[in-house]
Image (cartoon, rainbow, N blue to C red; front, top):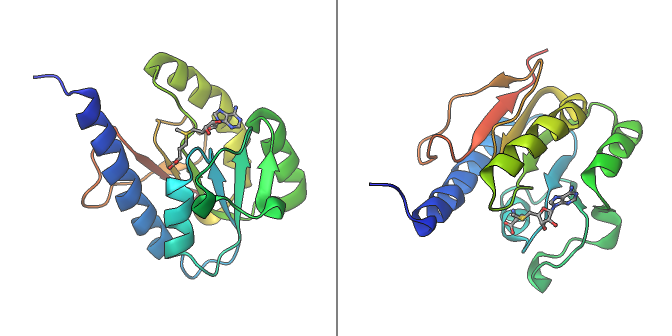
Length: 165
Ligand SMILES: C[S@@+](CC[C@H](N)C(=O)[O-])C[C@H]1O[C@@H](n2cnc3c(N)ncnc32)[C@H](O)[C@@H]1O
């Protein structure tokens, strides 16, 4: 039987939490900022704040419309289209991000895949050696290595990549 939209949504949510919890533990000893690509309602941002309270978490979003409890300080928001703000972030931060989480997609899987192909080259150079990238969509990196998913994550609903060198 095919999955309902509710099934898919639940799988995405539990996978995001499992992957973010796993990634936060894995990068705990690596210094550097964390990037959240796509604030939306702010649920994953709120969770990231919760599990990484000491980290600088910079948020990339074209229009902030999050829950008040999940709205980042204005100086931690890189406002605009990621196709503009990611290249600007590379000039500002270099390859220093320890964790990049991306949840930029909408409901159209084909469009999400095209978007992921286009945005991948802008994400890849921002990650520090040893850093992790967690995404709700498959990404298309040249050098980042896809990682096994932690317990609780549903294959195909979340992806983890690591910069090895
Ligand atoms: C699915 S929502 C993120 C949900 C979020 N993870 C949460 O837990 O609430 C996707 C967000 O990405 C943002 N977004 C999509 N494409 C973007 C782009 N090209 N540049 C900047 N933000 C973008 C949208 O405005 C939207 O707020």
